[in-house]
Amino acid sequence: MKYIIVILIFLSPTNRSSAQISIDPSLPEKYIAERNKFPEVLLEFFNKWEKGDQTSQIAIFSLFEIDTLNLNELVFNDLSNIEILGIYEESEEEKSFREFEQSNRDYMLVNAIKSIDTLQISLGQIFGNEFIDHFIIGNSVTSSFREYYKEDNILKLRNEDTLTNSLDIPVIVGKFVLSTNDFSIKDMIYGYCEMETAPYYRSEDMVNETFLKLKRKFKYYFKFNISQ
Image 1 (cartoon, rainbow, N blue to C red):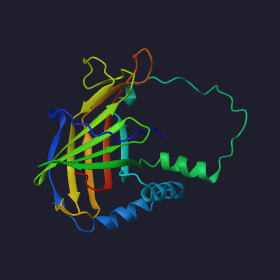
Image 2: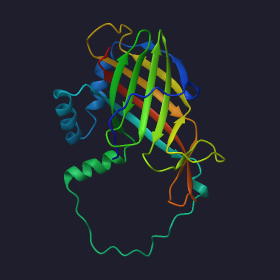
Image 3: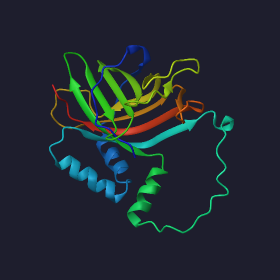
Image 4: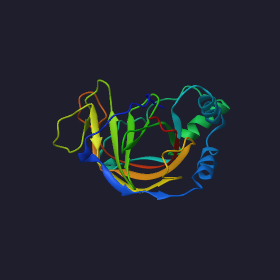
């Protein structure tokens, strides 16, 4: 898995999607139930992280899906003649991680900061390339998704666009729920979001001849403390 520390970034409003916020006080129980479905080794990491001095909390993705829309158009190398010399026997921990990688689930870190009238909730991977931001004003939220690579210009929104290493991708938020809308409390606040991106392109080779047309779908529970 690829992850990078969460960075608070105010994105261009042109690629943000707006939605109304609903309230569900039972979100803490739903968060815990979803979290308990993760492999034991990750639960141990979550527990150690939360008991440390970190201000970031953890978002639990029940759906972290990447749909390749042009899969039928792609040509892959023929690997049928590759000879397998031996059978590698994976450990139980490796098997658990492999099954997790194949389950369309994931996790991110969460930070939240409040200004005069806006609460920004930012999600990001520890060593990866995906970032989500939610901006809450009143009873509405605007949301955005960004994919970023430090040095590789492999992204574009439309087929005719110039390649870039950082792409703000339009999103549609289907549902956004919080456990409370009282942001003055010091207790943990919980949330749930369903979101999908518009299609975009990512190069899969160094000469930029093969592009995947991707669309992402997310469903996730999260929690956060507010920093002033």
